[in-house]
Length: 336
Ligand code: TRP
Image 1 (cartoon, protein in one colour):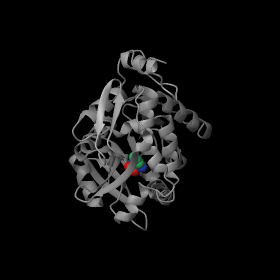
Image 2: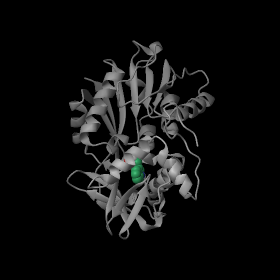
Image 3: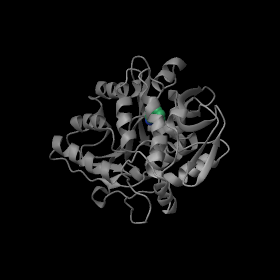
Image 4: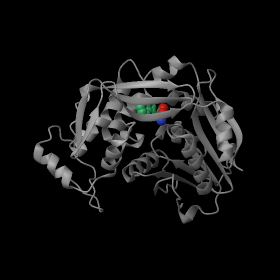
């Protein structure tokens, strides 16, 4: 077991069978962020777990598989939109601009931008995970050997300092994947405003936003026939068993995706198949048959609605690109 500098549980090797002594040992250690969030989320009257905990190594690998599913249109549609606009992208920023990517997990989309913007001053991937940054830098360096890569480890939902080297340079922000949709509207507006502060007055933001559409099509994208999304969602419980010595019987839960028309969002849940009790670090949680753990929001926008959200956060809509089926949108925003 590894502990980080604060003595919290850090990356832990998966172990399948947890013994009682393991469970005790887990229970005595200072609680990890995941442990705190899980216990708080399961203690609430409406149980929930924040979606950022999906992405351990197993979860990240499953998410990669989701992006390749026939039903999961967002990734490939956004890529096609960017490809179809490749000729316009260089005109969005001056030649000595700095490309700032929020989250460094979207290599193919980033490479497309770097491919067409050959005169960038630097590429700055921002990510909370140092490991993700190391990977991103190595990947980019193999293809763009001359590019100045200046990774920043940090949380872009908080005030963040960019490297001194890029001070005064025009900035082009990039936030693909409709990740913004995983936040509530208030959080989304705050994040957009924070990105505006990080990027500064002379900046442009390219941001992906998934569009409202036929409900069956939306649900299918979050409940695929091969069951990969179900596995991804249920991995959260496996992760709790692996890292915290919880005793979720994962087969006693099922994946559920619903669409909330009023809020324009997909909601992801884990549903308890029967009445049961689960133990996490000495806390016991009772589930009624059919009771849900809410695990994710994924907001779907219309173009006007997204632009209004951006304007509230200090951005001026400059352009919006979509695909012929109008499945997905890519917005170009200028600091207002
Ligand atoms: N940002 C992605 C989305 O909302 C994340 C995602 C895709 C996701 N499929 C999922 C999250 C299934 C949880 C469960 O589209």
